[in-house]
Image 1: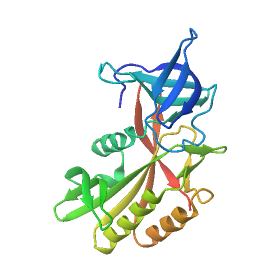
Image 2: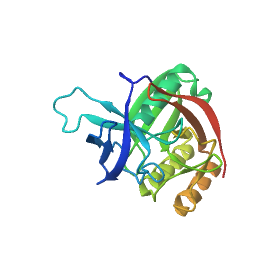
Image 3: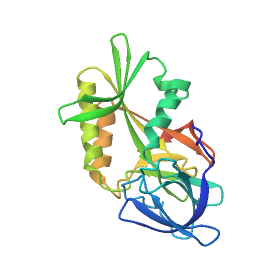
Length: 234
């Protein structure tokens, strides 16, 4: 996925009220970016670090700038735009990058399913075969290449795991796919230290037949794309 224009950079001053971030440009100008990430963004909003943003030509937008990346270390990027995760996964499925999901003829998005009023990110079908794919964006990384999900307690994520387990009980295939938008992450684990209930439920889901896979993105101010499978370690 190429950005329409190469991203521009500035220095992060602060993120606040979840949806806003103030950034200082090289000439000293301070602008406010829209922050397309409502999560805790643990480890992703570090004052003084370079950030990269896109600019919209839509005159109806209150804020023309969107925060896309942060560069916590030189040439190490984290993609903070959670809205891109599903688009990245769709692009990778269609390109055959995610080899576990290549055997399907049809892809539908945001399909209602389950007993808890959920929508699956992708419903893949081929004949009578169905595969339900739930995507989770991973941005929390620590030293040594370890990545974690979630970065905050997630009752919504727990609900999705229960729904996926039910899919398996009904005889369909269920996949939880971690989309890793962090160039420093080399493996992914449940964040038991943040949400122990999610970690326990994830292990139950795997035992019930839910497949859990992780794919890493290559990130730069010019483009983002999934390219490499990572291990999921429990």
